[in-house]
Amino acid sequence: MNIAILGFGTVGSGVAEMLTQNKDLLAKRAGKDITLKYILDIREFPNSPFRDLFVKDFSVIEQDETVDVVAEVIGGAGIAYEFTKRALLAGKSVVSSNKELVATHGTELLQIAKEKGVYYLFEAAVGGGIPALSPLVDDLAHNKISEVSGILNGTTNYILTQMFSLGAPFSEALAEAQAKGYAEKDPTADIEGIDVCRKIAILAALSFGEMIPASAIHTEGITAIRKEDVQAAEKIGCSIKLLGRAIKEAEGDLYVMVAPFLIPKSLPLAEIAGVYNGVLVRGNFVGDVMLYGRGAGSHPTASAVVADIDHIARGTVARPAWSAAKDGTPSDFSSFFCRRYVVAEGAEQSAIGIIFGETEPISGEENAFLTPMMSESTWTDSVERFAACGGKIISHIRLY
Ligand code: HSE
Image 1: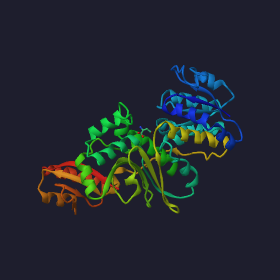
Image 2: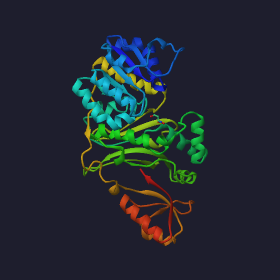
Image 3: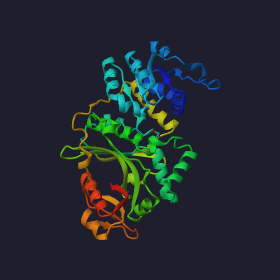
């Protein structure tokens, strides 16, 4: 079986390394050799051990009938989309780490793959090296899933962990993450929740059968979280984590969101620290399943790309499938209920009780309290009424 890698960056070089280092193991499993035939990249790599494999023209790969699987690790939804489509139409399976492409064009690409009798697989797109998708497509697919939630971004989890352990403000923790090479120079997609939005869209599509566009997913990042919020969370035995959540309620509503949550430390998600990722799957017979591991990086992500190649080589693929989101999916976020951590100032204390209901003060934290369960729309109305009394919300984080 012959492989072509598109893109020789962090992930692509890891895939080339793994296919080479574990060649015997992969061949033994598949009963045939798995050979890296081409690497597509516009840059020159004269000192690379793979230097003889480089090509600059995608049509060389497209027209080579001996290439069975293309590993697309370019990223983005531009040229990667074009090459993926052309590879599938040429009858080649495509494996990918590209969450943006899967979230935006996955429905169409899966359809083309099915029609051509090949595969479009993307285990590496969510949770890096964690086998987060294959259980949803296969081992847990006979369960009715009521929730799939996760810490899906290593950069933001590292920043939040540093804010907790060092008491650092957000800007300092971000600067440190950049200095260590965890956060990109332009960290917008990570810190604004955009990366998690794409990942939870994929998890929700596999769990609940419909791909929800990013524009329909309520998305918040971590930039508003203050050092004081971290300290208050500690006081009530919680961590603050950026979560992607997809929740199917008994009544049939499906809520999908990205937002920071206060999570009680008794729950495993609360303890996932640093650049690690974790995914919680709740099934009606299996109960809670936690998947934990490295969510980014060359070798872990390469491991997930090669897992898809290994499945294709052994003929053990469970084909991912979903349809485009229908009208009414997801449910209107304004009717999502939860408790909230709030810091408010500027109004009479009595106004808080009147407007937010039976609140629970956080001892030692001036003006910080927990609200009772309330919907998003009630919350928005309450904030407006509070502002009319001269009050101001300094901080607001939902409780898991
Ligand atoms: N920027 C992503 C993260 C990379 O920090 O998790 C992996 O998708």
